[in-house]
Structures are given as structure tokens and as C-alpha cells.
Amino acid sequence: METWRVITTWGAPPDFNMGLDEALLRAGPAAPTLRLYTWSPDTLSLGYFQRHADVPGVDRAGAVVRRVTGGGAIHHTGELTFSISAPLAHPLYRGPVAESYARVHGLVARALAHYGVLAQLRGAAALESDRPGTGMCFHVSTELDLVWEGRKGLGSAQRRTGGRVLHHGSIKLAGSELETGVATLAGIDEQEFAGRLLDAIGRELGVALERGVPTPAERELARELAPRYVDPAFVRRR
Amino acid sequence: MRPNDRKYLDSHEWAKLDGDTVLIGITDYAVQKLSNGNDSDLVYCDLPEAGRSLDAGETFGEIESVKAVSDLNSPVAGEVVEVNSTIEEHLEVLSEDPWNKGWLIRVKPTAKSLDHLMDAEAYEEHVAKEG
Image 1 (cartoon, rainbow over the protein chains, first blue to last red):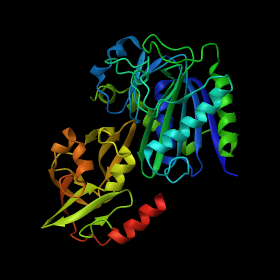
Image 2: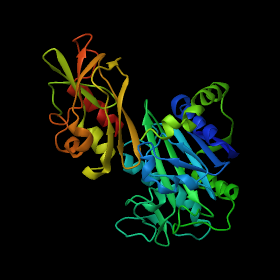
Image 3: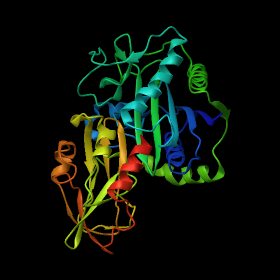
Image 4: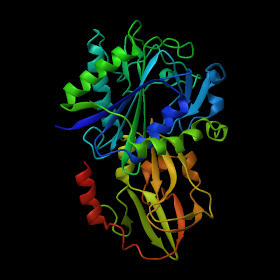
């Protein structure tokens, strides 16, 4: 049975969160690592290619970072962030990008089912949460996005480099004033939902989940990479 | 069978000798994998400036499909002498014609050999394994 490493960090600084994810992308082991985390202070993360000026809420968001993953901006407050770092040859990620999204979103849907939430891929449906001009990930949808009650409920983005993938996911629990109208899981604690997500991944993929920490080499690389994420030259590079 | 007038890198870039230079692009498989057959799923591409020196295997650019950013890697070492700047504004060209109009950069290589890369037959096997 495959064993995944699980690293949880609650209320970590934004540069640490992004530096560690990139370190796991670049230097992680062959078996997947799943991170479950929250942010302190509240942070807005821009997508890798997003223009800073295309996200009007950026000045009201608290701290700002730019992710190495694609997609739109996420306001990391009242939400659970997860990341999966793995080789591209892993069965969860091999083949077309779209199929990998569908597989990961299926796992999150299983976790949501515990709460009676019927989450499904958007398909051709129009969403009430689509809002032009905000630059926020949750206000733009594709057919592969996970939705419930007609609203987008999971932000998802990937980076693929050096034969490995980093997959970022964001589930809104309480929501944010910058992401109005999106699907939330009001009243559910981040750590409780993290437990449900672990249950779903372990059960659906038939993998063992083992609590762990970054290796000394991963920690060192994360420390080297972290400063870039809050460097204005990177945050405002577009 | 994909074109046998060029060689391939396992990360799905191709390299084709053209006089003293090498044209570099990405394969139809790379485009399909990123875009799932939908032109509009390719949203951004960053290419280098002419004059940049590259090592073999070095990342020379980045491409974003809907929500996935991927590196573009150089199959050869050399200096970038020309960039297909139309691609950044017209990513649909990569879907329409990845082998010709969809070239990304032209490199003056430090060595003219492409022998270290896969031929079309080996690349077909590589793609089949990757699924």
C-alpha cells in the first residue's frame, strides 16, 4: 500500500506556506505529500500569470503573495488550503491536466458528502458565483470546477515542473468579503474538514496517510525560496 | 507517427535543425495534455528575449493552460537568436500547427547534434507509456 506524508500547519505565515510548497514541488520524495494549512495573517494569493492590477480587491486583502500555480486570486481567510506535491507519473496526475483535476475534485466531493453536500463538476451549468472583473478564482469557473448549490466551492491550480506537480486547492468555509456569493461550508472548522479530506483520500485511493514533517533539506530549501513570495518585484511582476 | 524530421525531449518539446540553427517547439501531445482539445484553455505563454543563453534541459519559458502552469525546456544548449512573438498573443496557433507555425524559439546551438534526443519512434513509445 502506498503511503502519503501529511504535513499540517495551522496559521502559518504566507512566505513560509509558499516556500514550503515550492520546496516540496522541487525536492519532495516519490510518494505524494499532502499539506493541509491555514494562513496568518489573512493573505491574498495571486495566480502566477495574473496582473496585479486585474485584482481590485488586492489592497483590502492584508498580506499579498504570488503563487507559482496558475489560475485566479484566492483570499486565504475562512478557508482550508491544501497542496499535493507528487511526480507527474503518479496515477493521480498522469495523462491530461483536465483528468487530474477531475480525480482530485472527486476526492474533495467525497469529503463534502459527509456533510450532506452534493458537490459535482460544473459541466455546462452557469453559476451564480461567476462575477466578471474581480480577478478572484472563485468568481470564474470552468466545466471542471467543483460546485454545489449553483456556486463554485473549490479553488484549484497546478504547477508542473521537472517531472513533478504541485496542486493547490482552497475550500471556503466561512468565506471572504472579496469572494461574495461563492459556496461555503459555514460552521465547519478547518481542522475538522481537513480530517474529512484525509478520510476521503485514504478510503478512495486506498493509501495510508502518515503524519510527518518536512525533511531538513526541504526546510532549508523552503527557507531559501520563501522571501521571493513577498518580494514586491515578484508580487508585482505583472 | 509524428514528424521524423526532428527530435524530441521527454518533457514534450521538439527540436528541428534549420541551417545553422535549431527551431524549438512543443508537441501536439503537450498541447492536447494542457488544453484537453480546447484552444481557449491555453491562456498565457512567456518566452525569453533573444540573446539569452540556454543549457540543454534548461527552462526557457512557461505556458499556462486553464489553471496549470508548465515549464518549457530547451532540448539543446545555445543562444536564443529569434523568438516567435506572435505565439504569446495567439496561443491557438499551438493547437492549429504545433510543428510549423507553432515554433517557439530559434537557438544557435553550441553543438549541432541532436543525437541525445529521442527520434519520432522512441517519442511515440514514450507518449504511449505516459498515457
